Amino acid sequence: MLKSFHYIIFLIGLIGLSQTKGYSVKNLEINTKYPHFGLMKISDSRIIFTSYLLDKKGRAKRFEGHPILTIFEGDLSEKGHITNVSLVQIDSKQHISHITSATISLDGKHIYLTTNYTRKNMPKGNFNESNFHIEVGEFKADLGWTNFKVLPFCKPKYSYAHPALSKDGKTLYFTANIRGGRENTRGGSDIFKVEIFDDGTYGEPKNLGSKVNSYSREMFPYMSAENILYFASNRPNGFGGFDIYKSVMNEDGTFEKAVKMPKPLNSKQDDFCFITDAENKTGYFSSKRPEGKGDDDIYYFKLN
Image (cartoon, helix red, strand yellow):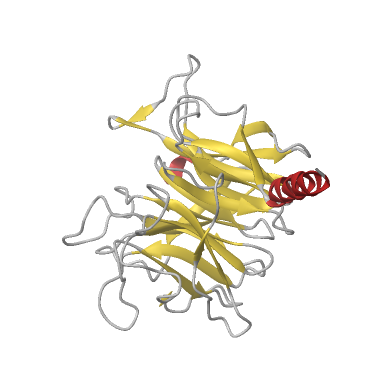
């Protein structure tokens, strides 16, 4: 009898330990039937994300027949809610009507965003009009974000997306499908990095290598304060769809082999856009899991 009692206590202890080390997730109130993704923290208390621009009746506005994707910002509450959501102000004369993701520099002076070419910056010659590229803009108090320029390393024949800055602002991470040479993309899209120099110029894109990238697709990188790279990939042996992975960056700038994050951060559906606090104990991600409110939803997670 006493042995059985000790065994029950042991099992309870194991269950408690599992709960202590597990994650809890919750669907946020701001979610609707429309997609919410492209998450990026711009400070400890502010976040930006991508969703449709809506009219007064709550319907998605359209441009040339397509819903307008743009970026919003909001405050982060202590309980994980995103409040006081507002449209990020972009100069209308820039004619940017489709933004899939963005990030803002620590000093608040520059924004990097993923978009398509427009009539204003259409490349000459043949190129794939569906390709994305990354633009950088500056903030003007009377205009908002303006003076956008395509980053110099973005070649029209390739696609570039999902910009994310290192915590010191000196490295830009992004996804691309660059082909040829030493920095050749392994799969459908890989994660690359480029140096940002003090004079505002950029280095050459460098592939993060096989410890991070696979022969599938890698998307939505995020570098934490602890130099842990989080990203999404649809590589084999995942839970399903895109899953969230992490790879620790060493002091010499190399990366450890990426490992898959556990459930419930991952699910059988697409999970991506993972961002976290400085202690890696709370954060947010997007997911299209069945219990959501429609399309891609934002979830808050907490390490128990």
